[in-house]
Length: 447
Image 1: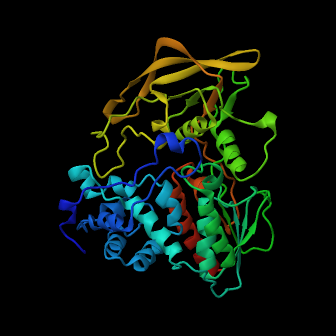
Image 2: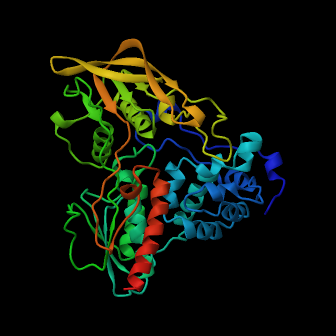
């Protein structure tokens, strides 16, 4: 531990976001970076706790205290080596992970100033790419072949892990380019797609074969492989089947988000298929990260007004006694997109869509109460009868995704990530993928 008293003298310093008036005019990443000296000082704040709760909270089991110490000492290569032992793609998690590690940091408990673990992680991997520490490594092949279906976060991790073990890996995906949710779900202002392309180039150089724009029937998997990993994600969005759903102007969130990312990638979209919020009053139904992404995208399109509603009650600000440290705190979260201009409301259920001439003009909502369950049980929702209409000529449905149901597959077929768990965090999908890759390796070594 380089400086045992740094946490007493140095405050948390975040890189912060680009100015709102600037960032809403483009799709560049909103987050800024600190200079090298400030970044090392932030790493020095790590207390090297007796029990590293950051490590405990991380689905990947990252060894944060170890690489923080290397970073503070200026040993960037050693920091990356420790980081990459547990995380295949820290350039992704360092940008989009909600940082479960930071919420369990002891400095979060003691002073509400946890170590900037996520930003430090991103800085380490960017330095590794910049300084040439990351180079292609092609392992000796063991003669066995594995097919990975789905090139999202889970599929990429399974492919990377098995490729490094010596398996010949072929990665199939129906989209034009690999990345899955990273490429077609997360806006460029959170994750620039050049970051994905940089890693994909490396994976190809290391021997992974990519077969894009290839639809695979999961009931008739391609022949010639010793094992299969199904990493197709949770693709079915939760819909809102209330009266008026057939009206034009009502879209699932990914219809906008995926389309916008394709447009930025140079793909032409027919005018009659464009999902664009320019000049419109937008209502986003769903209070999670996907809804937030719809807000940021709508603002960049030039929406005249953006409102986000959530059926659940507004969470407390700062601290929630129901989710004490080191648990993940259920508290009010304000994203960079919220800062860009949005009205937020809670405890509103949607009763029906209202339209004119076949187009949506608003949504009738009703205020609801949430009744605590007995003995800490599940809350129940009670309509109050207080109804109103929120005007909107575009409605985005961002209410999550349904868990995929799978039939019984052969013993050499494994399921990883959201396809197995249901929609979750990218970091959890990556952690599950590492576990599944190890299971495939064990299975193939005992054939």
